[in-house]
Length: 183
Image 1 (spheres, rainbow, N blue to C red):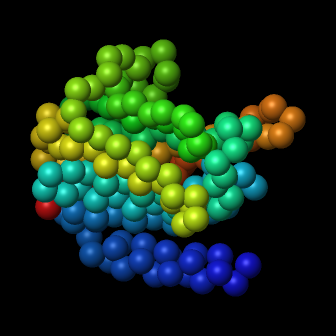
Image 2: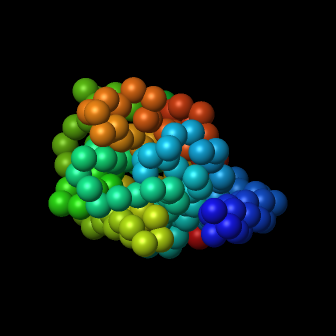
């Protein structure tokens, strides 16, 4: 428990430092998220960087496991157009061993609005030891936007097969980070 408290304190300090740097004009944004569920799908913190060539999104979890029975997975929504409400892209995939992921176009958060797979470079890596998920998407795959913002959702399945109450959004449901300038 001491390791978790130390990690949470370090992430809190990092998020506070990043927050003081003025996230609307920065290339990095971080946020702590409360423990909402007792499942590996629970997101404790997220950081987001809008780099020169790629965007990076990293989520920190408690209890990430390789076991497919967890049904743990997430969706990383990317908004690239201030004039078009909602996300234009979503990278979605499982957080358990043996699963896959894909970056697709979307016209909103609803799965029914997800469209064609995006051509371009992107990856999602799960580190079970560090309980971290790291997403990298090339800016070229997103048509090189000057500013982007993200919203992240994770969910999972209980051992009895139910999933009610195991969905966690970073912050409030369907809420984006501030717009982050490329840099």
